[in-house]
Image (cartoon, rainbow, N blue to C red; front, side, top):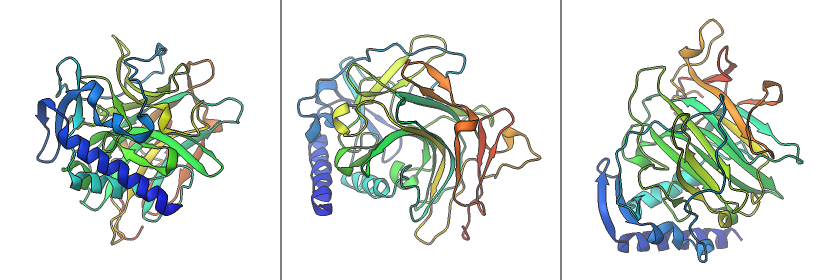
Length: 363
């Protein structure tokens, strides 16, 4: 069975690289030596080559209106670095090396259901549904920080949502990540990730799956620098009840929301009608030598310091059956920290919680 699943994943990746090499590009934008976005025909984007999307029809915009509330968060703080011509969308150009790196890190990616994974450390909170009232979306506001991360390490912060049924895991997530081997530099990048049917998992548009709709906003791109305390990312996604697709949107407190794209319902086998777990926090992957990178802003939260001294999460919002954003109650949250020697997790004074730590070779 494991052989069949691995063969399926290999065929998907191979077909993606092959199709990507023959996809016509109308315009290209170079972000660094390895990261180049091509503007391709929206109806010929490589994601549609996924075997499960053979008969998929692109949904140009969600059927829902994103509810406005005082607790709402904006998703990203990207500069406008890409503007593709009408009828095209930005798709990251992928080499075989890039796909191989993405598969490597994807296989070792943090799974919120199994939690325990060799070389992974985490600090955050999660909220479980009671089985009667699933969640149809989530959002969270997370501080963003530059960190010194080596090429064989990864450090990121994310918000996720998913379900486990009969040991089958489906989940999606967005957030920020420092991963020099994957993104080609040590900058902070926004990213998306999904794990769906047949156990397959994938970053951004590395393999077929995420359907890009916006010609300007990206599921993944470098985050601009900003003064400490003013650099944040609002991560969110919401399920369209009419189609079942999971949408990622750039929510605007003022102005029109921008719908970036979505993970089609066909990619999943247990989250067709909501999810039963949501969570947010920081994660690191250690180097093969066992050295752990810093998490958050590299400082553990301490009782005698204010919230701004460490990485922080303002809120964890969920969309319930009424399809309205609601703030999670602290009393119902599960606080998770696997290593208090190198990392910390504390309730904040003005934020939901604080997290992070320096890492090191004795974690």
